Image (cartoon, rainbow, N blue to C red; front, side, top):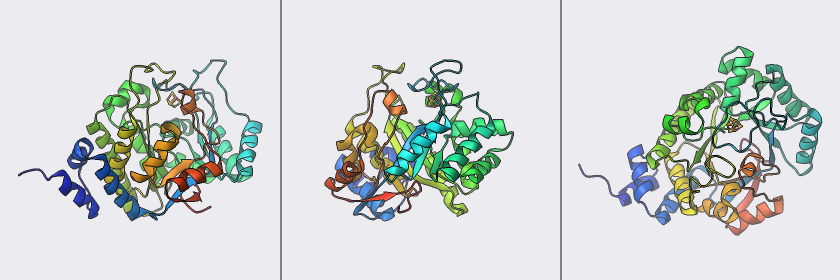
Length: 362
Ligand code: SF4
């Protein structure tokens, strides 16, 4: 049997049919960028208002930079015992929360290193303080942190997440997925475990009805087939979440290229080109047909490419980036104020709207 042509595959997408991994890979390798833009936009518009693009006003807060996971791509952490490591004080957190609310911000994207010196009660107290006392949505803790908390609490992942939820945790960001294949994770983050470690936390979160995001850090030596494999496990997980119909599931997919500055990989791995980023985002939008939203990574790609991504399947510009420490530690830092964000979206041809961390209207 002969393979369908690229034109036939694109027609399948435009007709609203799901494509399999082999065909996603063929589109990745062979389709024209302009055709991918058209197909990805069709999928985007099935989920979202074609005329509008959202953004969120929040702040990336890293409550500690002490970490014992030692990912080779990370320029952010300090080892336990290093005097340069920090844990934010309550006064520092309060100040950041007040500054965020003063500019109409709604939440914290809260992540840390994996700090072996903090007890389980610290995390419950941290979430309670930010949510109950400061009135913020807490989009917090990557799967590797949740695994550590489950050990500290002596409970299952589900029970640990439920406790965090009761303390005020609103949703869980998908940080630390990198590329969800063993070969790559072993190479860049051997202590984080295989793809199942990330997936099992997200599965537990979905089981207790919590919203999460799916992410991918690409351009770290993976093949295009491995990127498609990453998409496959995310799409299958999202199918299971949607079948539960309990409010749990991935709200969005976010992909950004690896930033090698100040890491052992600096100068060894070229940053993906703008065209490669747009192609990757478009294939994600086409293949992840059960994800409602796809975020543009203008923070890592710059404003122009971030705007272009809106024509390759993205419907969301993510955060204003009132604060960002992890990507900036690797030498990349872009931020804008609210007017600039509005202009960035409008000059790309869309109407801007402010969302909260789970895509509700603010
Ligand atoms: S990426 Fe996260 S888990 Fe890995 S070393 Fe950096 S702070 Fe630690």
